[in-house]
Image 1: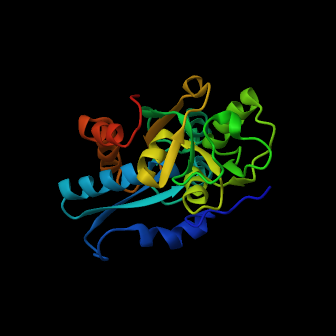
Image 2: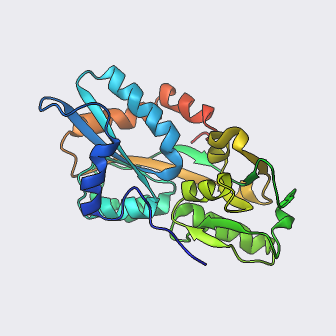
Image 3: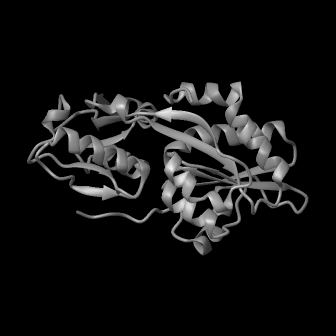
Length: 251
């Protein structure tokens, strides 16, 4: 089995170099900026919400950094220059408690599904088809998506180990959509984001393994008011509608 390092962030020092690439707009000394660390499964929704936030706050830009929740929590605790943290489970958020400026608040839920490429070359019709000869991929078990996948696989016992362990759920999805894997365990919202590129297969017991997403401002924020306002956007009706449209469940 193999694993991949995230192309987005590998360390606190690396983040300082990469984050400007995720920013919108040019450099302006008078511009206010906040940095949001978010679980990879939030890529599409938080990109939309960041654009909405910028549109509603003249002279403000939102920098986004997506990665495994565990990686981002470690960076937050290490003092990475950021304002908001959003993770894909409460356990990981709890591990960042020393860096939080307020109690975390749950803003969404998610469940896991199996996705296969649109042409389904391995002819996978049910979760039971994940047997010998099928190359399926999951997240590393340090990531929330990996913990859920491990629990589901333990219950179902498909009789074959994953072909690889990926750093986050978007890496799993990429393996499937590129045809490098016959199937992958991802969140329901990731299947929605992939659209016609994948076919979704129900996972037995997934409803009992609901993923809960919390968000909180960080102590090291240089603009606590903007950080609080971004958290409010995610929690209010506008943010909740964006999340619902993307396939997330209610908090």
